[in-house]
Length: 395
Image (tube, rainbow, N blue to C red; front, side, top):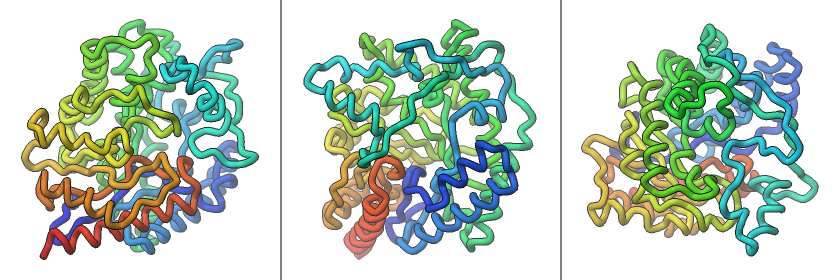
């Protein structure tokens, strides 16, 4: 995993504004036209890579525009998961009853968000889901060849684009996030259910590493799931539940060198008040249990601007040899951060952990969460802020 050896380097958690051919990509995927799908993915990922290069992003991703979490995704990886029609009024997600929804003062916010998603745009509405995904039998891994092929496809695009492997990180969903979307209709046991979730992603983790990539485990669930449990449970009970998911994640990571893994978590991307976000002090130690060398976390959002104080106060400690990847650009606001503010945030963390142990990042992906031109502008400010911070830190 790259470090900031002579300057602050930059990265982001993965999702980027869609390339122009995204609709065609998803249409080919849905039609099962593999040749067209792969050709369009090559075109789209190449466009995304060149945009990141032009902005000076140091550690890039494929933009994730070509991925989907649907029946095709599950069926490629495991058996035992089926699409089940939704009953009237039934939620598609296991954690759909967010406690903010029960607060009358925010009801209109939720009604709007449900229809338009994370980035409201005139005339754009989310499709109404008609089915949910349920574990109906034992979840068992299938032949990982299709997953390995996908990973090698992205590798070949990087090579054709002149992007080195250490300029790229490959994001994969973590078990603690998949539990938002896959219902347990078989195990009726939390440990076995989480183990089955880990089985879904284990082959992806290993295929990414075997291809020579660094791996990012995407797990907003460590923090965002707290506000989605209604009625609320105690902090102690929530920590017990999340510890099971951390253990499942580490099981899926078995055999993978820690220095090839970074872990991303946040408090969700929805543009709402976030008054039910769990305080970081209750989950930071769980995050640090993940077998990773680097931790990417939301830190620029106004509700988490002061989360660094859990380290400053001594309540938590970043272990020796680890890398901290704080968000210094927020993804839930259309406001473009001033360069000086970005630099100040970076310097704050560099002074806390050591300049070589900090990589500047965005809170979460900007694709689908901000208007495209604003998302790209935020990445531009990220690199400008890192350059200014570098001048301050390497005098």
